[in-house]
Structures are given as structure tokens and as C-alpha cells.
Length: 412
Image (cartoon, rainbow, N blue to C red; front, side, top):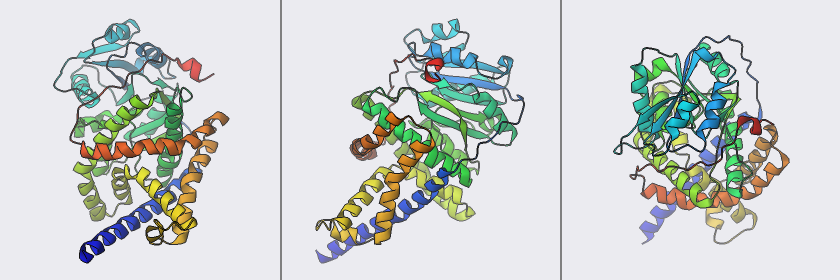
């Protein structure tokens, strides 16, 4: 029994130490998001774009997006709008055509999900007489800032091949769930994405609002059909040494789930996909990071470990409470890490979201989300554990969208 106890204690010490190291690393990287250099668009329109919109039964929201896309501040003859009507049983295709988009209907019950839809669409796109310099991807519930293609054109001309735009919420104040989502996104945009962009580290793709060079897609193929196709494609790019970059100066807004049930279903799908991709790529990513001595690949491997971030925040908070209040049950764990690390990391964990909202000029009522964030974090815990044991379940589930908000309503 004593041997088993020593092994358990050793594993716990190792886990706690690992959490401490990664927490410190993530905290230091996040601090790079405190600074922002506005990047000017200096290039005239030269690149042509295929704008792809992934849609499954999106008749309620597709029209405002198409009308929004038709009015982007970019020569209209240099981009075409394609709606991927993926296994639709409503009139999404008819609405899309009526508003001037090219509706491409796909019916395949055996291969359901956004990743398969994109793969099918790209194969059809390459077979068309007209070719494009880059592909831009959106979800049907999105709204897009008018400068989006101008920014992407500028970045492509500067040599970037995979670019992610700023992801925002179009309904942050609908419920405590949507506000919690919004705070999470505002924090991530500033202290994760912008921070890594400032440091030259690879950014992550958010599934929408992204631009990919066509030649790269033809070279490596899409090949991302998991529940988190964005993470899978980004990981494959990073393995090749191609780092996705971040465009902080152009926004995409999407609709967040209003109720807890829909939110947890969506986040469960994300986590199942994340665990699946992590299981397949984290070993090779770490191996390549060591072999090539590239910090960016190591950082990407840390991101594949990212579902543990909520657990890290929770654990560091418990260690803080154990150390500060001298709680007997937590004292053994609380004394493993140095006092300065426990106190410092915990303080920064809770300070950075506040700074992110301030720097992003979030309205005052948005700060209420900071009070809600710990409760939102708690709803993540069962998702993280359940997703880990059900990661083999790759059955795609659709998140319904109902808010037909127009771009003018957001930019008032």
C-alpha cells in the first residue's frame, strides 16, 4: 500500500508541477496581448476570392449574410459567393439563389458535417473554369465587416497563406450564456490570438472568418473532416511549418447559443473533436517541435492540450485558496508549487480578462460577464470529462440559428 501511495503522490506532484509550468507559460504569452500595433492596409485589390458559406437548414439567417457579403468594400467582380447547402431539407438553396449567391446542394447522409461539406465544395470549385487566388469561409449565421476582403488581400500579398479574422458575437446580451461566450471570445481574441500574433507564434483557426490561399489548399488538400475541422486543418498546416496568422482589424460576428442545453451540446461537439485531433496529432507535433527546435510547434502542441486550461484555472484557484486560507485538505497540494507562482498565476488568470475587455473597448454592461465567467467555467467541467470518454463519437450535431440580425444593427 505504501508503494502505491508513493506512486500516486509522485503522479500528483508531477501533474501539479506540469500545470504550474504550463500556467506560467500561458500567462507570460498572454501578456503580449496587452500591446497592439494597428496594421495598415497598403495594397490595392489584386486577389480574387471564392467566398464559401457553410449552411445546413439556415433559411432563417442566410439572407442577411448574403446581402452583407454583396456589399463588402472590395470590387464585386473579384469575388463570388457560394453557399454550401449541405443536406438541407428547407429552402436555404432557393433563398440563396434569390439573393444572388451560387447555391451548391449536397446530399450525402453517410458523410454529414461541415468538414465533409467543405471538402466536397472544394473539389467542385477546382473543377470550375473560373479559378480564385484564395478561399474565404464563413458560417451561415455570420455577419462580416466590410473591410474583410481588403484586409485578406493585403495579408496574402504580404506572403501570409492562412489568416484568421477577429471573431465576435452578434448577440452578446441575449442571456447569461451568450454573454459568457462573448467574454470568452473577447479574452481569446486579445490575450490568446493577438498575443501569439505579436510574438510570431501560430494562431488558431475559429471555423469561420478565415482565408486560405488556393494553391495551399490544392497542395495539401482539405483533409479535415473531424468535428473540429478548423483545428485539424490548422494543425496540419503547422506540421508543415505554415503558421496561421491573425487579422485583428477585421471582424466576423456569429450567433451564440442562448440556453445552457444548446450551449453544452455545442461545446461537447467541440471538445469531442478537440480530443480526437489532439490524440492523432499531439505526439507528432511534440516530436517535430523537438526535432526542428521551433517554439511555434511546441506552442501548438500546448494548444492541443488546451482543454485542460479550464482545469488549470480551477486547480490553481484551489491551490490559491488552500495556501491563502490554510485549508487542511488542500495544504499538501498547495505546498508543491512556490507561493509566488500560485499567487501570481491566479491573480493574472483573473486580471487578464478584465484587461482584455478594457483594451477591446467593451461596453460597461459587458463587464458583468466577468462575474458570470466562474459559473460558465464550472459548466465546462462535465463537458471536458464526458467528451474525453466519448471522443470516438464523431457524429455531427447542428446548432440551430434563428436571429436574422443585419450588419446595420450591429454597427449602429
